[in-house]
Image (cartoon, rainbow, N blue to C red; front, side):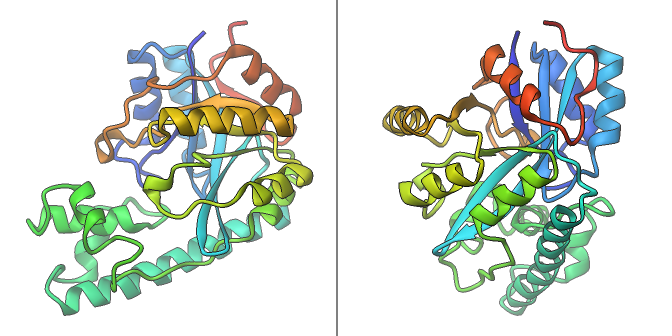
Amino acid sequence: MRIDLHTHSTCSDGTEPPGQVVRSAETAGLDVVALTDHDTAAGWAEADLAGQEVGVTVVPGIEVSCRSRGASVHVLAYLVDPEVEAFRHELELARDSRATRLQRMADLLIRDGYLDSFEQVLEGVPPGATLGRPHLADAMVAAGRFFDRDAAFADVLSSSSPYYVGHYATDPVRGVEVIRAAGGVAVLAHPLAAARGRVVGEDVIAAMADAGLAGLEVDHRDHTSADRARAADLADRLGLLRTGSSDYHGTGKPNRLGENTTAPEVLAAILERGTGTPPMGAELRR
């Protein structure tokens, strides 16, 4: 069984609609795929239908925005109920802040000639999508200012750029707590990916584990072999599950579906713990 537990669609910063992500997963030979858009469950229904059509089990998920000591922290919430009040409130705060932040960043980029208008950014964003820096990148690529997303992120969209504006993100311990209270299973995404920016210390991860963190995403493109070994050791020391995922974004990143996968026994443990929303799409083949 081939299992990929981290993908994004046009409901956040991916380039394929949710149904196409699932169809692409089937083409890539996956049996199970998790749709984990940033701070939203908007793509779940479409992914569910596509999964039923092509015979792929869909694990409903959300990548929850968190922050600790200036470091961005992403927590994957699997099988969570997005309508539980405390959890829904955190998502709304993050999404509203992301929208305000994007407008502020766009204004700075417009001022210096990288963009022509904010409408130029919104043209490529489906209604209701979680807004993020990749949408600014796409607009600048379309306008010929940069070759691709990576080039834009290496320059004006870097977190160290004068154009960068932060957004609301809850503390990761709080994030784990609200995910658990909403019946979800929390897994820390790419915990040691220093190439993406600052990472949290092991003390923060240990505190998250004490709050109910279930696992670490050990196998990820942005982890070096040394990072993977360290993450695996940390997971074992803290009694956490080890997952592997692609972090697929369509053409938005070079990450390919199924380039890292999760073991069937780890998926079984996640499914056993999650009580918020059941798996979707095709019935899981065990």
